[in-house]
Amino acid sequence: MAVNPRVFKDAFVSVNGTNISAYCSAATVESTFEELDSTTFGGNYRQFTQGLGDATITLTTFPDTTGTVNSIFWPLSQSGGTFALIVRESSAAASTSNYNYSMSASLFGFNPIGGAVGDLMSTDIPCRNAGTAGLTRGTT
Image 1: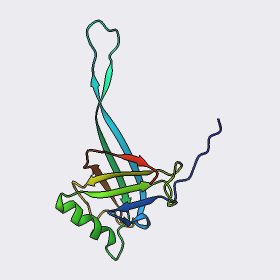
Image 2: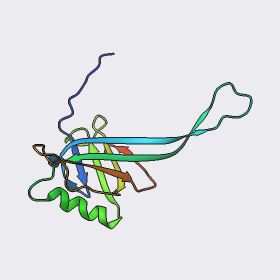
Image 3: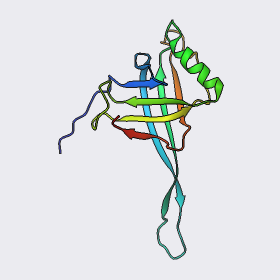
Image 4: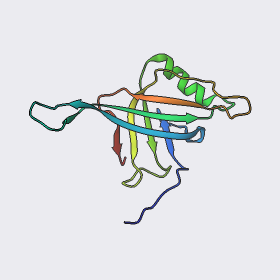
């Protein structure tokens, strides 16, 4: 089987319907589940069962001079509310080769300023799952 590596350079990121792709330099979509030990007496190996899931989408953004990133994420971090978050590998339409990874998300912190002398200002924004559906993968 031939490997077809791709360069990650054209992702799509949407927060509450606003395309913020131009402000992002990285996006990581993570879906994890608890490992529950279900081993019983008499076994020679431990057995594990999948428990509750968790999802986090972490965005790395470059704050801009117009304050777009701050104006979107600051109110979301302060309200405790939820927002729609969609990430795709490419800005092309969602398809079976370019899935929408989406979830209802919440912020539990936001760092509007980050950087060191001589570096570009950037901030990582961990968006946590806030819905019972968790992280979904779809083509629409």
